[in-house]
Structure formats: C-alpha cells, structure tokens
Image 1 (cartoon, rainbow, N blue to C red):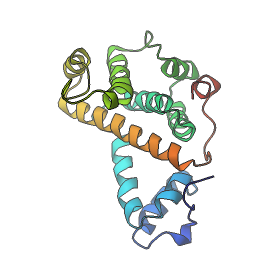
Image 2 (image 1 turned 45 degrees about the horizontal axis):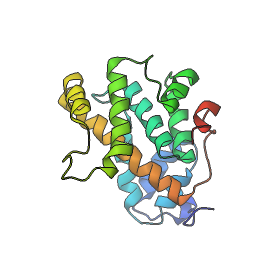
Image 3 (image 1 turned 90 degrees about the horizontal axis):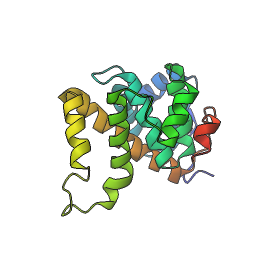
Image 4 (image 1 turned 180 degrees about the vertical axis):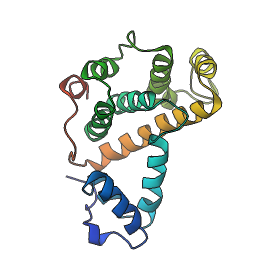
Length: 194
C-alpha cells in the first residue's frame, strides 16, 4: 500500500494541472508516481518537464539512457522503476535478452560507451554511498571516471551522470512509496533480479 494517498486528477493543485494534462495526453492515464507527487503542490509542475527533458532527445544516445535506467532500477531492487524503465527500453528497441544482460551485469555484448555507462551506473548506485569523501572525493573509481571522460563529451557526461542520479533518486522514492505497478511487470529475467 502506498505511503501517501494517490490523488485523483481533480485533487492536483491548479499549478500542477497543465503538467498533469500533458502527462495524461502522453500516457493516457495518471501514473501512480504522479498521483503520489501531487501531494506536494507545485512539485509535479517542475518534475514532469525536467524528467521529459532528461529522458528525451539530447546529447546522450537514447539507448544508453534506457540501459542505465534499467540497471539502476535493478541495483535498487525497485519493481516500479524496473517496470517503467523496461517498458520504455522495450518500446525503443532494446531486446529482452539485452535487458536480462543488463540486469545480470553481463556487459560483454554492449558497445564500449554502453559498457562504460553501465559501469558508472553501478559505481554511482552501489559504491558511491559507501565511500567516504576522505577516501575518494567523487566516490567513483579513477579508472571508470577517466574512461567515461574519454568516451563521452561534456554534454553527454552531464546527461549520463544526471540520468543515473535521477534514476537512483526516483527508484528509491518509488520503492519507499510502495506504488502499485501501472505499467507491465519487468520481463522475467529482470524481475528475477529484483
């Protein structure tokens, strides 16, 4: 059961209504995460455009964004985020076998950029929270940091690090909020890793 009430469309604040209308126009329904966020008036009006900008066309290849989103969801053991990220990835041409490989941390079949992005996602999700700043100011290994800096330009790096960071925040938010799924369950090879 959700930690907070899930608002109906008419319960959203007036400031959130334009973003809500845009979201419903795109997805055909009010997603549970939106219905939860709506409890904080004005937050949804900022959230949806930001997320749309980050996940939409940008400097970073869309496929990379999809892969790291799935990896972060799996590492944070979040069914809701995995459901959303897998649905998105599948709709953009990522195969179930590739999602299974991402879920299992099997990176051999991916491009160099994809492998590096997935390695960075893992370090930012698992290692970074456990590394004191005195040990490593960035929390990411020097080798991975150097490799991603070599493989991606500045705009791509900003989008990559932001994408990983946002999916970490959202998967933790989704998991603690305990939202019911409103998209299909992640494919079995992914769901089995949650």
